[in-house]
Image 1 (cartoon, helix red, strand yellow):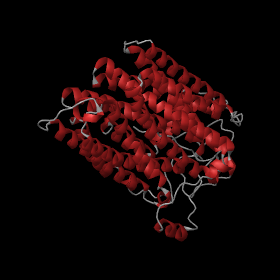
Image 2 (image 1 turned 120 degrees about the vertical axis):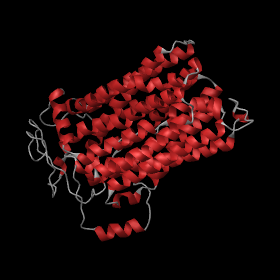
Image 3 (image 1 turned 135 degrees about the vertical axis):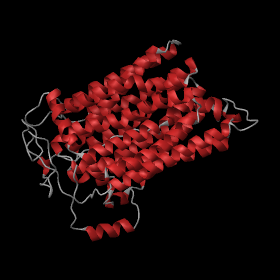
Image 4 (image 1 turned 90 degrees about the vertical axis):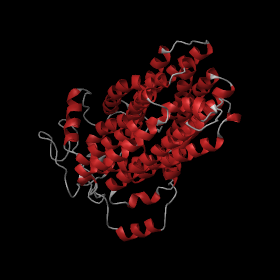
Length: 491
């Protein structure tokens, strides 16, 4: 229920300095963090604490809105951001439409949850490989090929809808292809940004990327619900086809982004070095683990079609509202995230945000349980006869969950950018992309299995409580995560 992308910091070749504390690296790796064959040895830039008093005063003044300087100073970034945001709206429409389409054919929540399960392994493989491709080939070309694959899968979905195909497996196949292409695009785009912007604008670019993602996930599902209810699946997919053209405009207008220096061939050796680094980076590893827990046990999106059909009513419109609600929370927290950069104990902030997230998800389960057992209720797929107060309350809970999840994401990405050596960030970015996109798909499977075995209200209630208990237990074992200090970032 979220689209998460990131903007890695600029390479050290643009002026980074040696960090005051070097992380321990695996045996066989140079102690400056570079890999054999790298053209340059690059290190993690330290956080500037020379203006701590001024920063503290700025933090007390309250949140600030996002800086728009990257859009003004880099036309290439502006076109890529605008094109990606517009096409991303269509992509979110298709994600929601596929779930509704499969549910309309099967009337099964488990069948909807299998969309994510089938896509998980291919996303893991291509997420890692996409990061290596970005380092070995012209990044504009890699982006273009991945975009063509995604666009072609949507065209085929539209053809299936217009011809009335009701066999489920083609939808699973095309959803998987679409998800794989989107994963590669997200990974490569993150590697492109430091080539388009100076280092001083990368934090602002990351905030803009988060806002763009919030707009996508806020508007896309809502539009999909309205279109499916009003004109059907064929037109919904077709609108996405048209919106996707904006992505090509952004990609084709990029300058050539050929690899710099000696190129390391993608393969197992490159992955091995990345994996060895991760084994010696407990804080970075912890950011991945806590997000996997949150998204596995606290991602109720596969329930939305059934909630709209048999619990709260409202059909596709309810699905669109619930899906967009989480993104509204994420968008709001992004708009008012100016003070987050002054947080020193970022690990503690992550833990608190995820526990709050688990609480909102558990509360959603309680709400669904109450309405499931409410006597005399009359559920209708028509929104005119839906339980509007319950839908509003469910939406507000998901707004809170989305805001908490986004706060966690901001701090996790900041830790990744600050504590990881630059020449390892490509591979770690691939892992990050896999976690934030693959975790929800594991959550889809969890939700489907538990809902079939129990009831629709059980997955969010049980899952939210599991998140709270698991995170509280985990930080007792990994206490160093709570002590992480942003002034002296260590992986």
